[in-house]
Length: 93
Image (tube, rainbow, N blue to C red; front, side, top):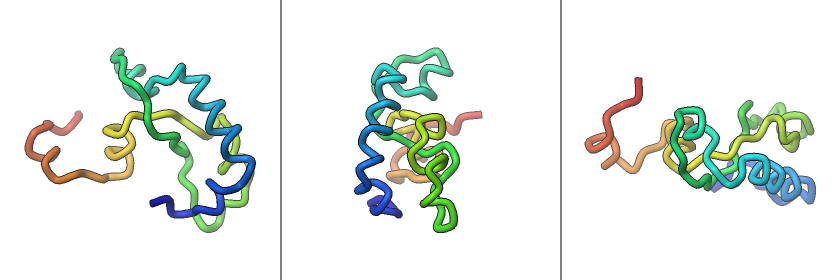
């Protein structure tokens, strides 16, 4: 669940989200940087939202602060794992 639901419920969010996905052509931007092609799934804030910056348009809604990531890269960025990944996927260097 999102930490700041008020950001994602704001009418400004959906156009920013759609622009991010359009700009990425629906592909994970981190995979593309690694010369791989994989569909994106999560619109991610490059500079993470905090209590202090969640009302700053440049952080919360500016498409320049958004990237489209696959679930694996989004989870990796936020240090999330389903547990099994730690045993099956070697860490990236």
